[in-house]
Amino acid sequence: MLVFAADAAALTRTHARALSRGLTAAVYTEDMFATGHDADNRAAVRAVAAEKLNLVGIGLYGARTPVDKVIKGLTLHG
Image: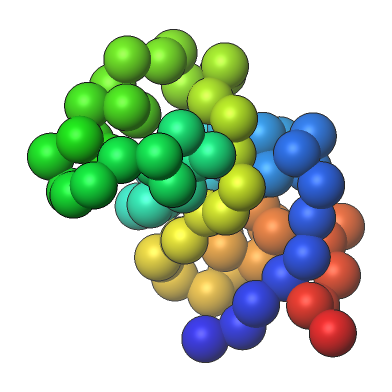
């Protein structure tokens, strides 16, 4: 697992790239930190259109080449 640092704009761009390439993505939004459990987390994400999510993190899963293309331009978290 590699961890990259990114601002909100880069996270939004990376998420859109992942979706356009059919990669599995787990999103972490600011709203999720105000909920108490998984069902509320899922409801908080479903309540917002994908392009309007206030992303604070993303988890990606897929083959190396497509993932590398999606994360292009991000820097490793230091």
